[in-house]
Image (cartoon, rainbow over all chains, first blue to last red):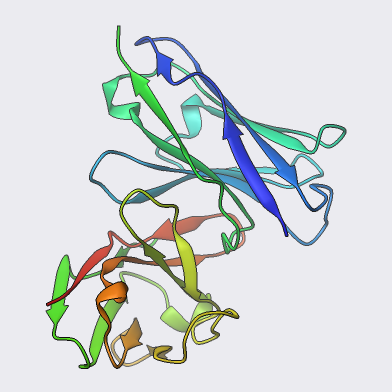
Length: 116
Length: 110
């Protein structure tokens, strides 16, 4: 059974860079059939797609976040990562990683709070 | 980019049937598959419908999906409502380079 697990700091200071990693187990991240993506959910709000990456390194970002987002992939570790720069309180959210544009498998999510 | 619009909330009694709509703002609803996710409080979303009308294994056949090109919308119908169906439901669609979620609908079973 494919499993995804997010990890990273739960508290980030304003103006700094948020960094999260998603570790995939039970399957290979090098699959040509699927991309790997990040989605976030602000407290009490809906789901927002951040971006996705293929094993080849091709990336796709939400236009509203594109200037601050970098998603990378490490096939040797079966992981992919998110970096979101210049964060503000508005970036406080539960961050999920998921498989594919269809998001058929999700991680459990990790809460990241932006606060000084 | 297009947007997906859902009603903020719907409610119905146990045993009844409810339909949640998801309207696409531009472009044809039929041009890209629609998925539906159920999210209970404190949990990750799970897929209850994919590719417009396909049900993942383990999802009861009380759940069904459809699209309507005339209204440019997708719908998730839940029949024989149970209290366990109470949750937030999100529609989603994607194209070759973009993923869009609807704003979510809170289903209350009262």
